[in-house]
Amino acid sequence: MPAGTEPGGEARPGRILITGAGGFAGLHLLPALRAAYPGAVLIGASRRGAVPGTDESLHLDLDDTAALPDAVAQARPDAVIHLAAQSDVAASFRDPPGTWRTNLWGTSALGEAVLRAAPAASFLFASSGEVYGLAFQAGRPLDEESYFAPANPYAASKAAADLAVGEMALRGLRAVRLRSFTHTGPGQTPGFVVAAFARQVARIEAGRQEPVVRAGALDRWRDFLDVRDVCAAYVIALRAAQRLPPGMAFNLCSGIPRRVGDILDALLALAGLTARVEQEPALLRPTDVTRVQGDPSRIGRTLSWAPQVPWEETLRTVLDDWRGRVAAERD
Image (cartoon, rainbow, N blue to C red; front, side):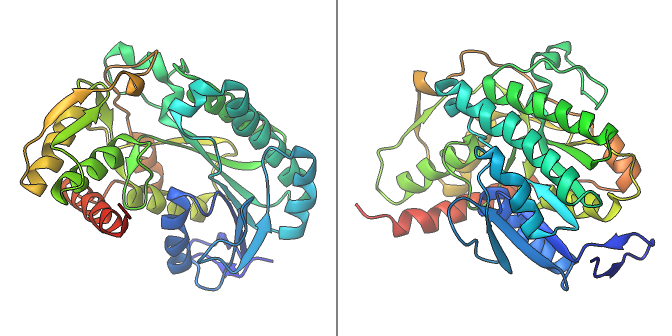
């Protein structure tokens, strides 16, 4: 049962189920939820065992769709935050069927399980700004009414899942779709561009790598966020979920495109280094978009959310994180 009510009268969730709780965003979201809902039971759903920072653990494998109704019934959630996904774009090119299985069929089955076993629960779905894909070629900031034109298997699977969640909302799922654009922060794996750069800079600084940075396409513009701002948006959306129209979609973005090559330059400057850059063909996408820029007006207008973490602080925290991780690496 809900633990109480919000100041605006909305029910305060007493049991919050977080899929992907042990992932990058999940590990930042857990303390944000703890601060916002100190009396709530945080249930970490994972297929790899207990998740630090949660009150209860639940075995949940999105690929085992038949088991999801029982898992949701066992959790008895008042709210579900669905972060779990196959989110590596490069991996999605290597295994499109596996990406579709997890991201579309797993999400669809989870939503149906919530409709069946916890129909009053709020359902926050971590969609992606990648769903717009080639629509960014219009050369303007895209809002939530822009068409989907995904440009890789990951993006296509997330676009399909986004549509599936929207359809389930028509049948009663208390869903909010949060289309997060590229975000970064401490703890991210080097499969993502800012973390990949920061790791190499930290290794060069520590004398563990020659002053050569291997990179993909540098002349690309992306709309970046700090993961802490993304998690703040999830908390704000959860507070409002029961009063929002079911299926409401929000872009989580800064509205400020940043050039990938400039990010590398900024990280090198923070470390006081110079390095040669070599393009790595394996890091290039078969299909790509040159410039990505979202329009965050709807979430600012509706939920009063806006990014708060300065970009320079984001880069410093990522680099400092990798300095610590590199220091702990074994030769």
